[in-house]
Length: 164
Image (cartoon, rainbow, N blue to C red; front, side, top):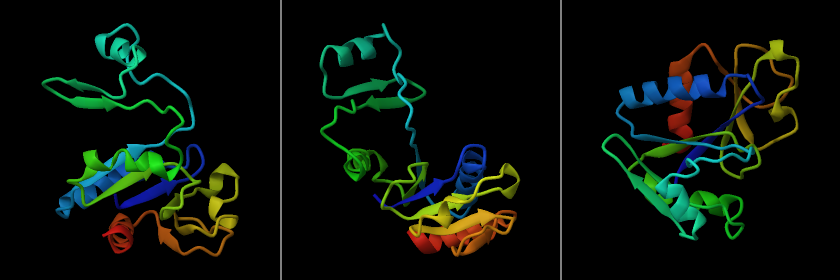
């Protein structure tokens, strides 16, 4: 699964950039998948509903098919860690040209950081050489290349150069 992680600290604009990139890349004829990575523990399924009960009973995977949407719940049971967890998603994204992942700054995959100086914290790229570029209209204190946040077309071009 070919993926690019859009990383950054809270409220720096990760979601906004991803939403804008999806629209721009789809307009250019690309098939884009997304994954939201979170470090928080929260229930994705609805306790008490049939699918939740199936999972609690021990099902290795639980699918939900409805007229409007489908979902698969795969428990994070500790057998798959780190990069290996992304591999379990690969079949669902097989039809995508690439996947934009929101978050997961610890990955070995390519990373684009979104950064805003007015929030008063240094960019992650200042200490993480694995960040390939920083999307900002400010002047980050780091050596990573800067992509003008206000120029979505050039960021989309960069994404296509990196992930295809």
